[in-house]
Every structure is written in C-alpha cells, then in structure tokens.
Length: 235
Figure 1 (cartoon, rainbow, N blue to C red):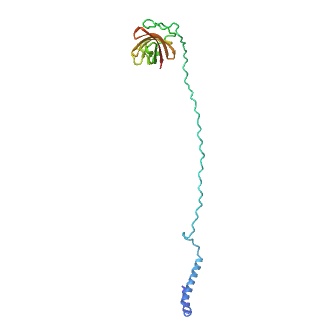
Figure 2 (cartoon, helix red, strand yellow):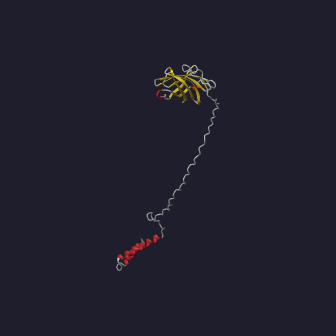
Figure 3 (cartoon, helix red, strand yellow):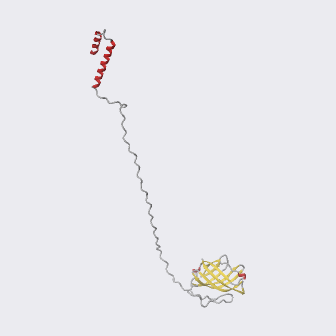
C-alpha cells in the first residue's frame, strides 16, 4: 500500500512530462519483479503427476524353454518262468505178455467154438464197457461185397453179464469169458438183408483193440458157411 501511495505521488509530480502508460508499464514491471523475488524463496514443488516422466518398466526376462525329458527306455521284458509240473507220475502197471493160443478153439456144429483158451487171469468185465468201432470182414460174399465198419458199444446187462451191441440194431453179441488177454463173442449181425452167425475168441492186439476169426453160418443155412474176421477197437 505504501508503494501505491508513492506511485500516485510520482504520477502527480510528473503528470505533465511522463505519460500515464509508461508509468503503468513500470508499475507492472515492478510487480512482476516482486513476484519473481518471492518465488525464488519458496521450495521447489514437485511436478504434477501428469508432468513427471513415466517410470521405466523392469526388463522382462526372455522365456526359458522347458527342459526336454529324456526318452523313456523300453520296458525290460521278464523272461517267462517255466512251470514245473509237480503232479506225481502214475504208478507203473506191469504188462502181461499176450501170446497166441497154441490150441485155438475149433468151430463146431452151429458155429460154436466151445471154450476160449486165452492166457492170463480172469477179469470182472467192467473194464470192457465203452464205445467201439467194429469191422466185420467177410470172405466169399457175392460180387466181393464187404459190410462197412459200424459203431458199437459194450454194455453191462447186469449180474456180471455184458453185451456188444451194434449202434441202431437190436440184439448183438454176448460177451463172456473175459480175461486180460481178451474175451469170447457170440451172436448174430445183420447187414444188407443178410445175417451172419459170429462165434469167436477176441484176442487183445494192443490197448483197446481186439481181433478174432472164425467160420460162420450165413442166413441160418448150415450148408452156407463163410470165413470172417472181426475187429473191435475202442474209441
């Protein structure tokens, strides 16, 4: 305020020689100088956030490739372990030698052979029960005809008796005199309208195989006799 009063005094003194505009310019200049002097004594003020330089972003590390896993080794095969059979072996069964009968039975009237003189001990006959294949080879039939092989079976008829029955036929053959070396066969077999009387001693020719020969009556005609060979093989 004192400064302004001083200015007004100057204006009144030199009003005639200095123009008002120059004085106003001096006044404005003086005020600016005062203002600048006051600004130098103040603390530096931080720039507004908009005026501050942007902060530098921290450096980004380059991406690191994941480690490559080593290839898996193929599985090692375990060698198979041999299975040891611990089943005890079956007991040895002594074999009884079977020889040909030096005195084979002779056919009698009606085709019967009498008693079969087979070696070895008698057996109950149950060991013969089962299915077989039968073959009857007959000599002297017209045009060289031979009956085909046929299925058969040995069955128990009770009371220690047994019978060899052709499949699909009635009757069959009585099985008697059972031994380790064979058995006796007696009966009739029909084929193609013919009928043959069979009576023979069946000798063992190997495991489950029996064979016998004879001379049988054909079609119940005692004057018509033919030779035959009967083979019975277990199935």
